[in-house]
Image 1 (cartoon, helix red, strand yellow):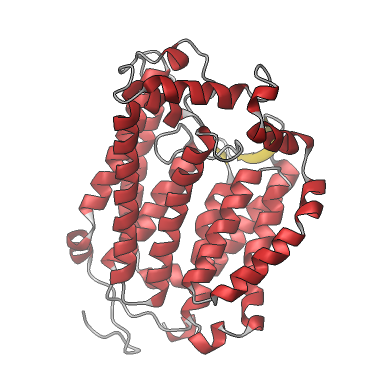
Image 2: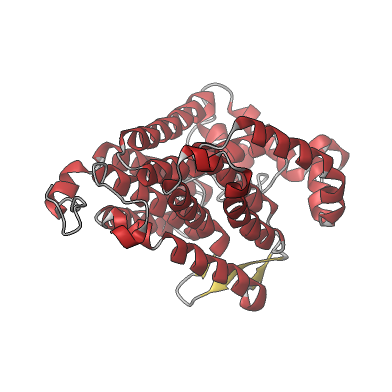
Length: 381
């Protein structure tokens, strides 16, 4: 490291960054993506098309993209955190105007080569913006109630826009990621308790604003057998598939619920269900252990980072990754209503994989720039 013109440390050289790169973390993420490839191959009845091959190509391209992001000077990420958030906010607004309608929801923008879901990328933009906001704050400032008004608004605005699409699952994830960032930023626990009490009091109003199909999901969650061939079909078949897998599973390409098409959305939201049926408790536990290892590796990067921005960035992105897995497993197990959250790198989906791999790039960036000093304000860079 050498001092820059303003006394700040210069970013490591490309060679130093490659040497510092958390290659074991990259390998773990790629391994999880390969599990997804194998499952999508099985979901197509033993064919690389239409899902597995696309998934594999995206995995390769996006792994290269993640490594490229790791090479960026982290101070540039800090400088452009707010503009990135602003661009994603504009894209969320654009969804309302020119968005593509799919399955009754308007969540995507067709940009030619791919249908982009801005709400997914907003999760990373929100982490970037909140990491920058709290980086410049002293603990005494965080304790002041008015200091929390801007970050709370930064969370609520995209949450509200995503709820209008409507996408309750993604809106919930945005709210949870934002809440995690508030906690990591030093917000007192009693403030979360107070906010929770207010949210509880507002539940009747929130319930009245839900769409009919969203209320039906709650009713189905409480009693799926009330409509076994309709609203309850997905979760009932998911539970049957998980149970039929037993301890060792029915065997690769041998899952009756998935292969005979009883299990709906087996390549997207319910990919983990197919995994549990074919590989049993052992296989499901192995994948969850892999997810946990990736999560712990991400948090380790956060703890070893010198700057507050890098710590918050790595920790926030890692929380987002973990939330994908927690919500998906709870959803397909019947512990929460079906909300359409994919299993990271296992479920088929371009924007979801892009979000996870961009997040990997940000964590790797925090790792390779772990000693870089970031001033409190961009003008000091």
